[in-house]
Image (cartoon, rainbow over all chains, first blue to last red; front, side, top):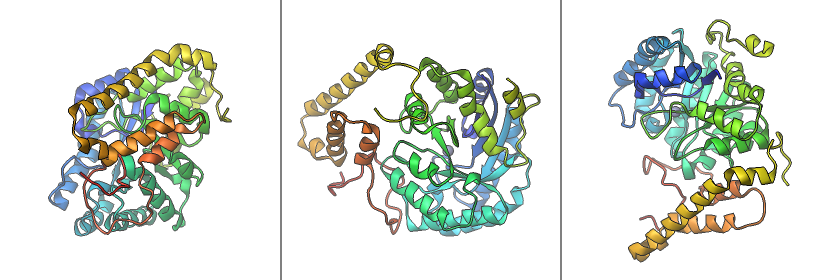
Length: 277
Length: 103
Ligand SMILES: [Zn+2]
């Protein structure tokens, strides 16, 4: 089944992973700007990374028939350094016109500090100023509930359309506060932390499929680039029909991402193809 | 029964037929993990905030009411609402230290 992986850090993956994704039906993916597992030493380091995800990575993906889109920011793991954040934010606008850039992300919080929150606000304001979609990372483990609440409350202070914001890495205790305020959300399918395919399906059964996407969030840590096809198999094992599965793995991400005029699916794979099926 | 947006296509018995063995295995993994920590023999592990939260979470599993997953999530979650004044550590540790006994 064709799918869109809304969250994949392909700079950390091999071309073999692109092959696996292409063979399992991935037609497009989006790569949020994130932490490489170590702190960068300068704004120049970020700028090289922005060149990588706006120029090199889309070409690499295209070799396997996958459309590569991206999001730009200084990620929450490095958001504590306000001076660095200001400098990186100053440089982001010059990359926003690149053809594969869909918006600002993945911004958000890590340990929920005052500086992280200030950096988050700066990014939200930058996105609003430039009319960009927003993709948000929520903290891990014990920090997730607190961080998600602070993020939602902060966003509600702005005059923004929640339908243009996706708050990612939702789990059982944060899904309702995200969806209840009109935002989109993502369930990230990780082998150790976050959400298993089975729990993702439980959440879909309880909340329905509106404004929910699933993604691999594959990166440099333990993660699975073909987590979305694994989810598709798990959905079939639970007895859900393919039309419902397609809504979650294809139509939903296409609807959210399609709010950016830059997001185009390969020929014949549009929403209309799905509606006609 | 909890009201659902998408009713499970499988009956309860079908879910047991399909998923019992793998969840039985998961339960044994947890039991073996607890035995392993005990066998190591140091009392510090029992007082560790993560293991205290773990035991509270196990009690939630034994409750006979839906919503266990969300309640387990909240056992491990930081209940405070104020941002930290500064970054204290780069990564989360899996449980909030309600006992202030960070190891
Ligand atoms: Zn990510």
